[in-house]
Image 1 (cartoon, rainbow, N blue to C red):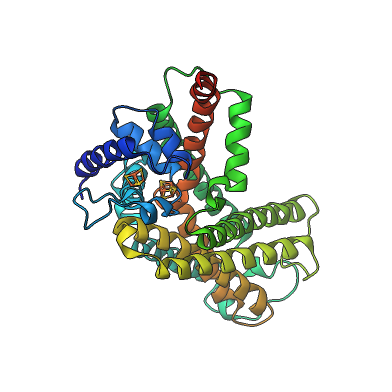
Image 2 (cartoon, rainbow, N blue to C red):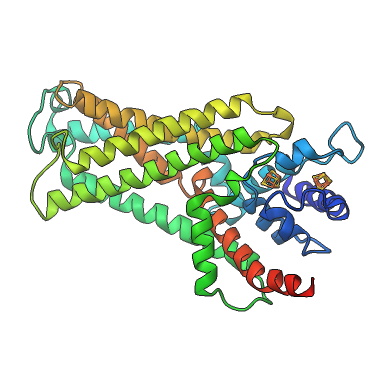
Length: 367
Ligand code: SF4
Ligand code: SF4
């Protein structure tokens, strides 16, 4: 479905939902929807990023196909979410190219080849296949300055791309009549995002919702632990002048392993869950984007563990190049992949917090 068709279809379905309102207690989306009489494409982008695809409304709805209304909010919102990743990214055409599994693998293979070739060019042909042990062993395969410059540039690209999309998305969804964002709004949105509050609602698919919540927690906190491990590694290297690889009981390794386990278990569980869900409620583009992201994180987790297991063998150089290639690909594709969902969902929760504080409290007073 084209972007315009999705918007037209979204307006049609939400008019039916607003007349029905059976789902109003299900999640934040329905409280936000019922505050509208008309829907713009920007409102639809906001609702879509507020939806976490639990599918409770779909299973409760008496108007799904084959009923003539053919209501299907999870599929609609999934399609609109992918459209929002495309619309707010720059250059936006890259989302179709890089937000898919094929895009991730193409970039990853190029990055791996680059790592191997640059290692051979700078260190000689046999260095990558040799057995290296002790402090600085990793840098005998790929030099420390090359790694720092490469990932520094990718980090700026990644954060810059997210910021660019976030500013454009917020400009479109920010409410003009609710005043500035307050500290209370920020605290509520941050707390809802960190606790994955709406993902844990007890609903028709309670078991699946709870599992998804824990799997998402494992992925998110696994990623944070790995980020802390990397930052701590930089501190050891530059401030304490102790170079990687570190012993198994070092906090850098412990945090990295815990983070890696979280990512592997979480992404594998999410991929398995996806394979078992109701296909009729799924949007094809969204499924592809979601599984591309899960597969990329799973690959990073597995190759990271392989580096740890094989670091005292001659295979370390090749495995390290593969691992760094997958990480570089994740960084490069981050502004165009499902990864950007973290940013848009947070901003949607922020707008929702504003609405709840102002419109929500006014509604409560009226009652
Ligand atoms: S999804 Fe179905 S049951 Fe829920 S509000 Fe819309 S029309 Fe009503
Ligand atoms: S799929 Fe779940 S989160 Fe999305 S609108 Fe329906 S009930 Fe809300």
